[in-house]
Image (tube, rainbow, N blue to C red; front, top):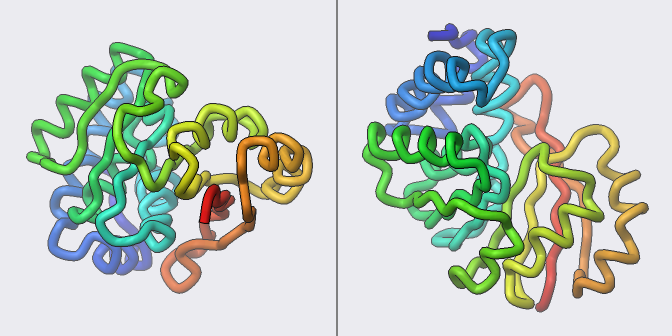
Length: 211
């Protein structure tokens, strides 16, 4: 199990609260079966908390209470499972096309006893209408122009995409501007999450459709 630094522990305690134990169990899964089954590379083990789990969990500040959330390309549950642990009020659907990843996600959900997350195997395009999603999340799926085509239709005309991005966020927004307008985006912006918690904040692109 990768150790938490003092700063990471303080951040994790604030984000996960009394569910910190569940977050630790999840990191245990990532560090063992997650690596063994190729969901993450072995070099990521020392960075599981800082670079992955905390980096994802802080985006919860962008998501309203009781939101119905689709996590597209959930993979190792980043950010979907992080959000399900941090925010028991949320209802998460983890959308993932690869069977082996879906099996792993379900095993983790069962082991942690999470009752606010379900796994749905398939491509995002096929999940339109699956639920009344108000928020879609994604991390490391594709460039924003392509990601918008995959995610915004899931919102059925009203809601928000919260996409974890890096330093190229503004460049991606500029390139995707035409596609975003065509898909009904009414506002697009960049937000830094975890400013009071993380050494390196998480850059998020927020795209709103509808009013």
